[in-house]
Image (tube, rainbow, N blue to C red; front, side):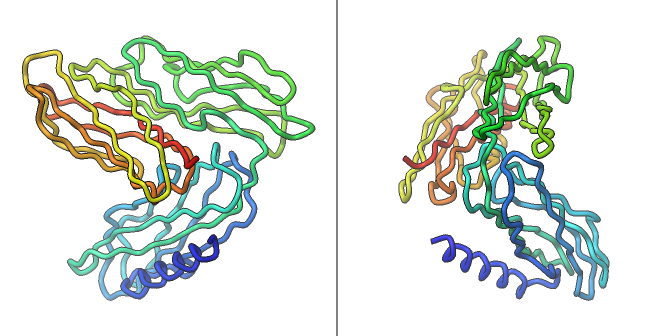
Length: 320
């Protein structure tokens, strides 16, 4: 099955190259065995073989664990740019994995796309749960993070740190093969979304630093989501969905200007009602999940009763 999926991936990459004048010399890269949890990145050359400049529009990743960036944003004829992909592997299951990134660009007034992919064989020795953290609060909130080392000679945590004073980390305890870390948001943190990092320092040269992405949503909102968090079960060949009501503290109707999902398997639509509320339908395409547990979010940009952003955490449970 893995070889069949790889063959399809290669065919897609070759098709995207054939339609494009932006060329990637090696669009498919196999990085071999990679230890889960360690920083992982790869750079692709983008060569403009066309007669006109290429304007980079966006980079779309196959999952929220992949971040891509292209420099420069304009590539002149005969010149080259660089696409850098950074992958978050912490918390992902052992075994074969593949990630795709699609670069959308404009050349001569025509919009085109080109796709690259990375395959790896993940080796899981050290795990951190949860591997990504989302905290939604209007004051302070505490989250426990657990590190587990399955090896006969486990590592030792020697320090923990965060990327912002508004997020505090403390090592509570550790014994043979496990450690518990407490995260706490500060009451002084400004309202809005904050994308931060928990860094776990260890005495193991192979796992010198483990990084956990932490998203903090500090609310001062007039609209609340019911339920505030969503859990969807991924089952092969079966869609899943959930309804969420958005309710305002005022008598004004809730209307939405834009909905964004950070995972390609999730889609969301909305309708007015009942009354002044709005109803969201969050849908899961199980075929795009890969059978793994994923923490994702749906971001709602409200038009009324006030212009604000509401984020709904979505936990996608793997196939059972």
